[in-house]
Picture (cartoon, one colour):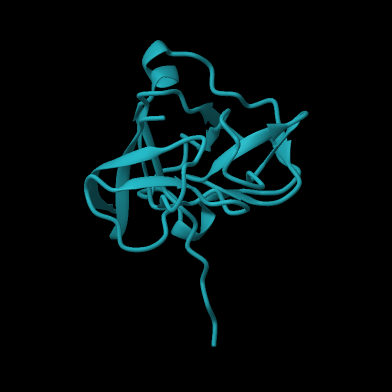
Length: 150
C-alpha cells in the first residue's frame, strides 16, 4: 500500500514579527526535515524539534511562498541541510496550524509535544502554553488557530 505523507500548513498573519515587518529568520538550517507549522528551538546555527516541554524560545517553521493553491500538500516541509524560514513565537501571538494531535476544542489549552513540534492537549504545567481560539479547515484539512498565553 502506498502512503502519502501530508505535511503541515501554517498561517502567520497575526504574529508580532509579521505585524512589524521584521525579517523572518532564514540563516539557519536543520539536520532533519522540518514540517511547516511545527514549533522548533535553535541549537547553534540549526533548528530542531524541542526535546522536552521546558523550551521557552520557540520558533514556528514557515515557508511563506508555499501556499496550498500552488504546491502539492506533500511539499509543505523543509528538507534537511537546507536553509529554512522560522518566526519567533511571542506571548500574544496568534497563528494557525494543521500540526496538532487529538480532538481539540475552542478554549482548550495546548502545549508543544517533545520531538515532533506538534501541538497537543496540555497534560502538565508546560513552560509555554497556547489556547485554541478558532477551528477551521484549509485546503480541506483541519486547522486550529492558537494564541500563546504563557
